Length: 480
Image (cartoon, rainbow, N blue to C red; front, top):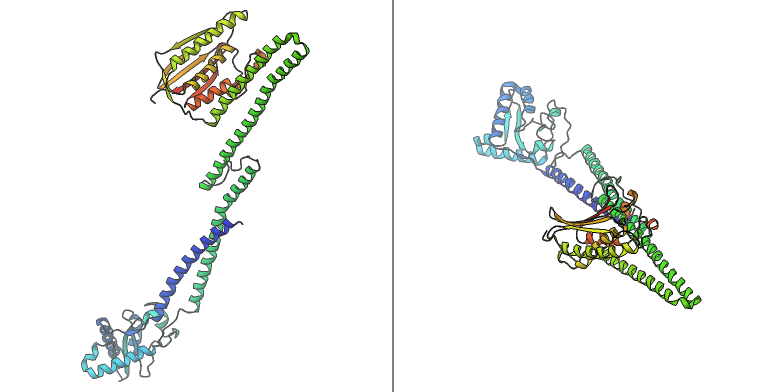
């Protein structure tokens, strides 16, 4: 168990023990108050009525009738002593109460008839027997409450548990019962504190081991959907899984990108080295060699420029520059450039020129970085022109539909294999490049996707019925 477990455990245990001590202290104080309660004579009207009833019962029914009356006198509780000062039901009378009775009788003898209203009275039986009757407060509680031990006293068999001056204590059985209850409460507190501390510390220990594994390079998920529970600690574990999965994907992407960049740079460097070797061997072909070196250096410059653009978009996904952009005007310029290049490349390759058609609403406005939007749309349009069938048609349309700006670029090229569609926006992905012999680094669509996403839009590619590819770009309209 770690330190956090013991901190949880001790805090919860202290709270439980404090609550137990508080509750136990309340009961203990109540018992002490009951034990300290001093019985006193009751001289009120109910006491006088009880004494009158005792006197009448003794006078008319004798001692047996009075003895049977006493257990029924519960409120107020009546006590009768014979000539030898023994209570008729065998109940012990504390010394302090007996002194109070004697004092009351003395005062009553001096006061004459007023003694009948006091809490103690002398009674005379049919045969001239002398008895002392009195009514006491608190005396009944000390023997177990007003009714606690009456059943054992009605027949005179109740145990003599009174202690002169103190009254009966709680008794050994009661003390043992209280100790058992307190002990059980403490054990339950220990168990509850241990379970709760273990419940809190277990997922934290698991998170710690997951962090240690992540620091060592192991980003495998550890808190899957099957994790038990649904509290905040389990949610924290699932958030860690999502974070580690994202980190793993980024690291894999960085490694793949580094591998692809190395491969892309190695090819032009190898061709440049071959051209330099040829220039050394055949000085008369220096012109052709320089053209080859210039062409490869331009490719490297283009590749590095695209990599810098992609890196900037990956590092800062939010567009820092935003201004109104007329999307129709922007795409119209791109289409004009694509038409010019198609008119030049078609006859040069000995085939029919590719036709580029443009359809647009009157004006479609968006907000964003004009240079980045130009780069993204140029990559999509150029990609369609490169892969379009010779003599075919590339259609570019710009529309405002339901509050969004939509750009569709459609060609009639070979399309993309369905299994490759999810990967065409990955850096350095070139579907069928070896088959078609088309030059490129596979960064154009990746850059286009980053730019569109940075502007809060979406780019999707689907194969067209009858062959070809359709790339759809949606961007929030200006003012949304």
